[in-house]
Length: 396
Image (tube, rainbow, N blue to C red; front, side):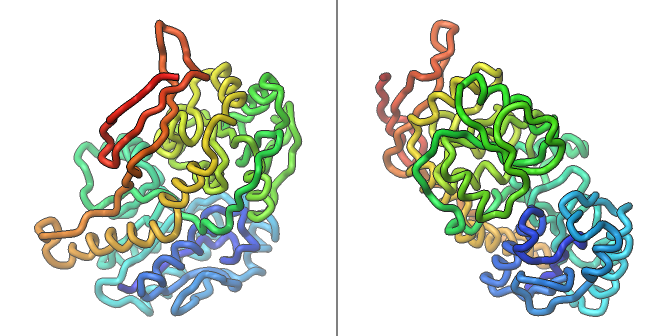
């Protein structure tokens, strides 16, 4: 399979720009494509660390600096109206035109910012290979969560299922996430904006009587409690996260995925989140963290998070969110997609996408409501078979 992989033009395709999540995801996706033996034609900037068969430069560092500034890439407006995209998109369309062959696939990301490129080549398949933003135009899409897939379909008034879309969770290089003994603080990682729930983080940590470390960029005036570490690179961020008692993700809007949740779990760090959006899939309540609805539950969760098994959290995350798992999922997905050149829906028999298998015995802690009262702090232990059937339980 030949893939035209379009990176975003607002930064160099190197880990020096690891503050840009789209950039690092593109580098990891290129690694997956090459591990599957596909040909990768990469459309990116001058400096590049993503594996590829050909690097096609679409923006120079000088052009980036002129339009958005040397360090402004992380704040760049990802839009076709951005002058950087207006310059890069015609170049990408022209360069793909020089190289395209029948049955090639264009891999895109970043909402509608690159639509002009794919519409210039309607005979090729266009695939949004991750996230699944509402504004994305791709005919075939990979979402990071079922929750967001449903939201996106609702926004776009899609009433019937799209059989050649898929859900593949975010994928990471697991060995980059250390496991450490927890320290006496909780942490927050993300943008400093109201809709990320900054006020909830600060208030909950203060009421719980624990230290708080915050990592990110944005409006620092929103921070009313805790230590602001600012925007730091991936290795330093992971070290801080691995030593935290918990990562707090009180996002107010419906989160499409929230990569930081599985990243924290890859360190063995529990996640305390809101109870909607993708967190309903990435945070298993009472096992890998707690999902909360009101401030008091966030406070209780912070105080009780030490009861969770960090070793199990890390093992499960490595099983679900590793590059190795993603390789299998994307292999199955692209095989399914390529049947559209032949029998499509009628192709049979066909392999299933990989699925999670629960181990024979898992200790499960859940919060239940009993007699109308919250039982945060009480627990149920259940031995669950790999098929998901509960075979025994005991209340403690």
